[in-house]
Image (cartoon, rainbow, N blue to C red; front, side, top):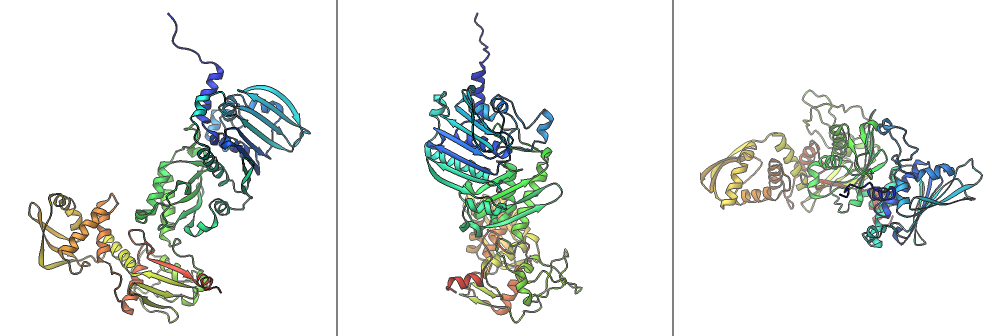
Length: 569
């Protein structure tokens, strides 16, 4: 009998291991860039030929290596980053497994040239299939240059499965971006087939690096997000809720400086946007720092996925930070609040005891936050008192309320604003009264619609509908929420169709949004001064006054500077 279980040769083992880490030119560049960053480089040059299929060269000005370290670096599981298993819990570098260079060397012709600052001359070592072929000395500056030639030349099947040059080129660009974004204090050069493609100069902050990559024209679509405590730090940028981002190139998550993909964080981001998410997909650049012993980055060969010790805590951190940023109105308003101090008495809100109340949403629009007259309280019931003479507002096309401040023009969409007001009242069950119909509505449905109505009757009754069955496919409506004026069969059918078309999985949320939309003031509706005042007062009593329940802005701001630019001043 012949034995069937074979012991693989070291060369075969190396090539199999290489496939887990190095599967295309971009993954090779990822590993080399991580090594350069770990070496303390502040300048990195990447050069490729034929989308990295022929040549990949990464040159840095890091600490460099001596000859012995160069040779050892290409041996499997040789690393300067850890000493024993306990170090895996607190590893702070990008590379630590000692697999990158051995994997690359086993599937290419590899040259490593390096010099430390204290050395008089550098060392060049040429490897083929992981074996040392030649060693020489070379004059050079401090740092390391790694040249990868003919990637997968000894694995023709794997080379065959590489994608087109343009696809591989785009993947390389993404890896450079993933390295450059968190390392904004590093200068990056990228050359492809002799052409200068990228030059990212050193930056002093993440914002400048982001907009080096995606261009400043997108800056107005993003708003900053920040959170800090003793353990966790979060900063970055998220898109305004009304902005729809179709490309994943504008969705980046970095944990302790490492680009990762994580379903928990992605879900927390979407949840943080809440009801404003329904009409658009957000973009984001989030940079999260947390204790190293609370994260496991060793669960994926390419370190693209992570596992958190405290998943609920991370979810809450992301969710609350985004929700508070969206709710604060930063996405809509970015006004110079000190310049508005002359109208800080625009609305003088008090509770029944006469004590001053603090309203963050209104404060961000009309008040100077240096005033100590507005104190935080849990109570949010406001009474409108007076309008300052120097704040003017009027109606435009019977659809929009225009408010003038010293530095800007505020445009309020009366339908979206009223929709938000009604939605929050319904959700809080605040002043939601039942109104008996003088003539009950008898409505017959198709069998399918009748089943749907039956499934939501309990939810409708929560907001003061009174509905009973008349026959198998017919219902009788005897009462409706008082906010639904002049209820008719047609209006009820419109509400039902609207509920069915909503995207939320929560049927009660769909009902609230649909009723709020149908009950809200419509466009082309003339409002009196008192009605406009009341609408504004009610809007800024809402928890999220800046967006309607479907995610559209309730108001926008056009600064005086922007207006003057438009007219060429």
